Length: 537
Image (cartoon, rainbow, N blue to C red; front, top):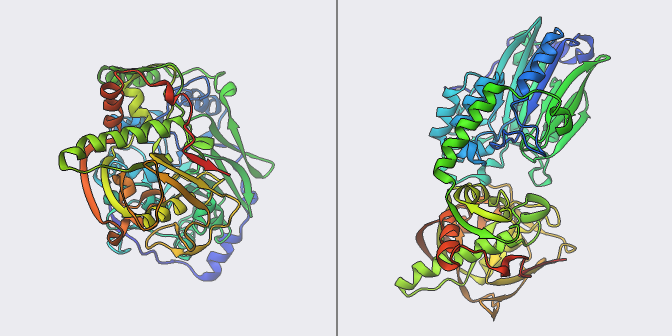
């Protein structure tokens, strides 16, 4: 439901200052436990390296039986990625969270991946509030979601404020966030402080930030640490987005994060006047019984999915590396080679009817989300590796534009970057010791335009011929890249696109056809290792 975005203080400045300066350790939360998750991405099953979520009821019961009030929160990116999330466009995950008794969840950037209407449906399906305080519609006139919720646990009145990263504008398709504005920097700080003041005047004795902000250096100005250094009154900040683990104090605020894929369960308790963050790791989670009802729900959904997606597509004698970092966001992988070769093959199958030919293909490493294990490859495995429904396009660009997108999409290497260009039919190198000098941010983007083309990236050859800055090249990309996702902002500028062809092909289906039709259901040995197309030094 949309609500007005303006909040007016209802008490004097002196009263607010007194409330904000009241130290958290003056209150007694010794019978409050907070359990939290983030970036589960549909990975809700207990596995060898993952706690899963079916242990949550037993963990909650342990503390409730000892007289504790238990608060269960999620910091976003729950409804997309794994097929347990994707198959129903997130609806199953929301129903699972309903059953688990979540108290609140914030909106992650990937909650938008199925479009605003699907997200709004999932919000309506939830029996708990799904919140975010910094997403506005219609030029900042209306909030997209409820900004906060107030929950009473025992004698405590707890205010929870939701946050969503402004990086959403480059991590989902542009159409999914049309007409939305994500507050950042000073506006984010100002809006947050107003909400803290509002919750204090409403009698909240504990303020929690439930954020999907993370602390990636490229997002300076709207990271959780940036926010916490500039506001007063948040006692606990539960974070997500960067798939990291975190447990530190920023001023008087405890900042925590659990990693990703339910590998850990976060637990916050009160000890000697302070909140303390702990991680329940796999070996600890395994000491708790799995809830039968939750296990039954997950199995029923898996069976439904597998009845559709368990068809064997191909076999492989080796693993196809779909790891995140180090992996597809930091260097060339055999998965990147395989996928981009499939894209280039499909493009030329389509283009030959028009008398055209593609020269090269690129895919952002952030689109690759899982590995293919040795053995049989099913439809489900392919969808897990490439979960985004991403159509393919051929665009004609100048050598200058091509070099610009490679510079920008490798700008922070050797640190991971989601835009890392996995590639086919091109050889390029990146000198990570050379500085990346900026010509300023791209319009409506978190990424900075390179000032000096060729300062860090050198292109050796394309299609077996020496690269020429003045030549035009037919480049195969996904729609996500074409619309400027993950650092490919130069392609958003229509002046840089000489020609554009919709290939009427989707990336996961393209990989399936490549393996079945081109290679007869067997991954060629050439893909056992990466093929030295990209040099990082």
